Amino acid sequence: MGSVATLYVRNVPSELYAELKLWAGRSGRSVNAEVLAMLEREVEQRRERGDWLEGFLDFRRRVKLSSEAADLAIASIRAHRDAGL
Image (tube, rainbow, N blue to C red; front, side, top):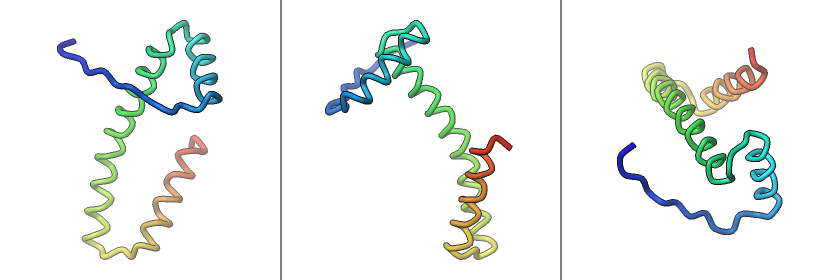
């Protein structure tokens, strides 16, 4: 795996920690392993979306799309994604 860094997270609300602990228990992992798995999933999703976002921003510049129209387009895409369509 190579070198690894240590990440400390402070001021985690007790309710959030309780949820993390519950999720970790359900998946048979420690809280640390659960948080690491969540971070890995999020990083992958952001990498995938990052490529899409850069393309969208390039398209917006080329067609001179207004900020309002871009916001509406992004909101529509997110709603479609969140609905699982």
